[in-house]
Length: 122
Image (cartoon, rainbow, N blue to C red; front, top):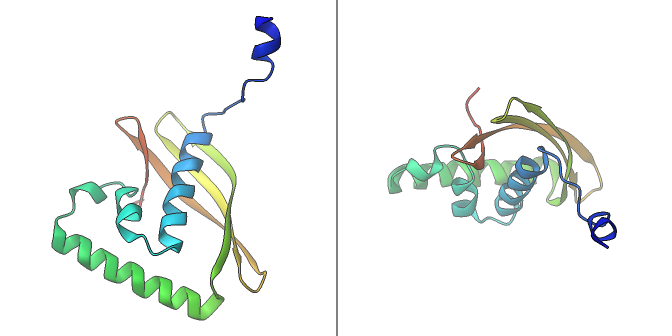
């Protein structure tokens, strides 16, 4: 019976956690939830209120530009993750825009104190 139950356990890989963290961040960004996005960025929790406001302004400007240039984001799909050691992962994802065009991008993620965050610095 134990063998049968274990056959149905979800198989996870080390890349699943950083992919899920990035998906959460990008979903927040695309729904204009900038505070959640900032909390998903490495160092974001250390910003003071003025730094957060400036960062949010930059994010809004970028999102406005992106929407103007490519349209709204219809969906975000995590494609793959490549672990580099235990604390760094490059996640590959695909944006699908409202006009059905697709764009594949990558984002470096870093694990700090057990939590995966977006790494904005190289």
